[in-house]
Image (tube, rainbow, N blue to C red; front, top):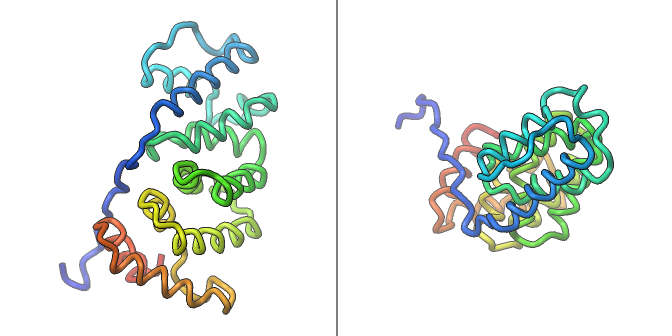
Length: 212
């Protein structure tokens, strides 16, 4: 590939530990909440995961703010857990979007930041996967705190899923951080460039090359 060619983007690999059992528990919790609080929005009996996703998508109408303004408080924790434990970053928007619209961008982002700080490695990776959709409405001070926490986590945490999920949205230019964190930026780049994982090596070069 020449220097003038557009860079290709390698897809984020599937999680090493997909955690399907935990995700199914999250789905069951949400389905029950819908049946209790929004009984008119969903029919009974949705056996497969695909059918459950479709049913919840229709019930929550995640792109329709009129559907979401009346979500009661129990939905916040249930949607957060589903967003974090969803192993597929192509679909977790259907949980993050209702969180952001119904409960606010700040509260949603603060909750994901707390998961990144205190969760298990599986949960930290899930929070990083959910972060993109949570920040469609930017809350600047939370973004700054996320970036600094994510940088420290990427350097210190050797879990491959955590690093894979954090890197795509991790700023790698020192100007984005206070001076005391500049050495960590260089260390993060070095870790990714020399890592045995192909995705990390590919992704860091793309970000350094394009400035993303």
